[in-house]
Amino acid sequence: MFFFSVNVFPQKNIKNLQSKIDQVLSDEFFNSTIASVSVYDLTSGEYLYQKNTDLLLRPASNLKILTTTAGLLFLGPDYNFTTSLYYTGQISGGILLGDLYIVGGFDPLLTTNDLDTLIIGLKQAGIKNIVGNIYGDVSSKDSLFWGAGWMWDDDPSTDAPYLSPLTINENSVKIICRPGEVDSLVRVELIPNSNYYSFKNKAITIAADSSKIKVTRGWISRKNNISVSGYLSQNAEPDTNAINLYDPAKYFLSLFTETLFRNHILFNGSIDTAKLKGNSYLIGLCKHRLSEAIDPLLKDSDNLYSELLLYTLAKEFYGEPANAENGVKMVDSLITLIGKNPKNYRIVDGSGVSHYNLITSDLIIEVLKYLYYNKPDFYNLIYKSFPVAGVDGTLDERMIGTSAENNVHAKTGTLSGVSCLSGYVTAKNDHTLAFSIMIQNYITKSKIAKSFEDEICNVLANYK
Picture 1 (cartoon, rainbow, N blue to C red):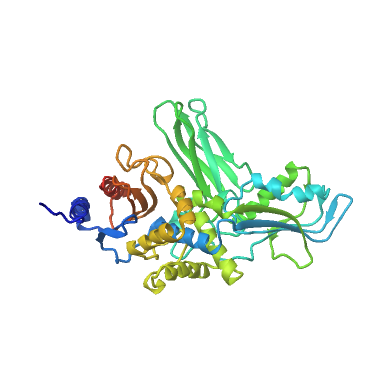
Picture 2: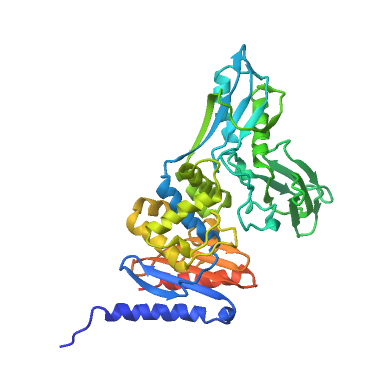
């Protein structure tokens, strides 16, 4: 009679998985590049693989996992980002003899379409003429428009949005270029159309099957003068770009006044920023729930969403004006809650844009474990909002044709010389695995680092 230990085959499978990951990491690419990998079997409750898991590395957008978890934990998914409209003075005969104040509420979801909602109160009050000024109250935030350690030359990318509690259209403008007649100017559409920015088009439609469109603005001088140059093939599909805009509060106020005019409400005053006065009256509100922001924050890796969430945490728990340092204190509270010491890491923003951030793959795994075991509702929300391999978000073109496709739910993270991927995957044995891969200090294109992440994910997906 033969007796077999019940652990023989599982241990053999674990060794096999470890060997396969080691083989991926044996590539000469890693002779000069750091890799940290941690894999935890949530179903069986054991680590399957660990390499360099205590090294402090830059998380890039993997930091959004911590910011999102802290937001859900301490604010709750039903927390409302609220933008408020107040007036001073008095209303008489359809005329507001006073000023309007719009108080920013760090709402990343607010768009031009929401402005009609905001002015419903004005219309219900019968206001047809505003004899006064319009002010944006941005006093709930400090005056720093970027995070610590953000790169000046990331401007005017939407990856480096200007930060303000009064936010609209993700503080950016979309530019769509379509071919015209050959040798004529490309047809350009700006969304939204506004007088807040100027625009110059130098792009030409060409007959050749080649396109190169450049969209920028006077970002060094912090001017919102947009220019389009280059060329677009007559047979090309529309070329869509987006750039950030300087001074988002003024952008908001400009779009707001333009909305007033479209609603036949006269206004001839000036716009500026100022703190709300005490003798004011609430007349309009626009709200969006935090749960609505999780999908774009994680799936699209939107930096503005995560930064505004960090400032919201700071405002709600430490008061106004909110600053990044106080927001990070709430992320530190999460780290303490899961049994780690926040003093062992450096976090300076909410999005991971800063190269100052330093955390470990071990910390990310602990957050993923905490969600799975202790906060199933938040786990389900985050799991569904993570990009899905080969399907959507920042993973829509990755792992296609492998066992990881439509299986891996994970957050990407990319900076110069940095690529990270952390999340969940279902193995062949139906176990749910949490993993974190952090690759640092390479000078090649990030596509190469991402290919190794994809290989490891495929190994995990095939684990039995």
